Image 1 (cartoon, rainbow, N blue to C red):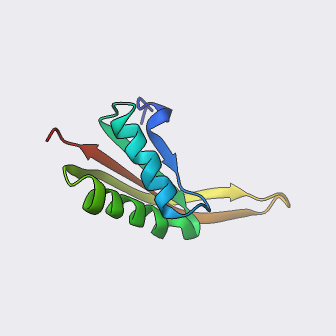
Image 2 (image 1 turned 60 degrees about the vertical axis):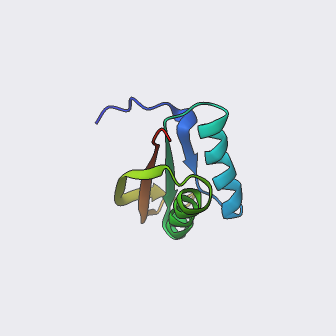
Length: 98
């Protein structure tokens, strides 16, 4: 699958509070004119990605819909050289014209 999407519209979930990522997504939609935003997370942070998507849709952008959800497993190599497998999620949110 060829990556045609702009990296600016991708939000990687980390250790910050969920509202920081909701604000980042709102900024992409409102200030940068993005039609869709992709929320990505791995491991234990997948639940936070779902929270971000739902807060965004239910509280701030009722016209936004979930266009696609992809789940999978990624292999990560640690500093010690061990390979571990972690779950990953990618949620694509599409802003429909109101």
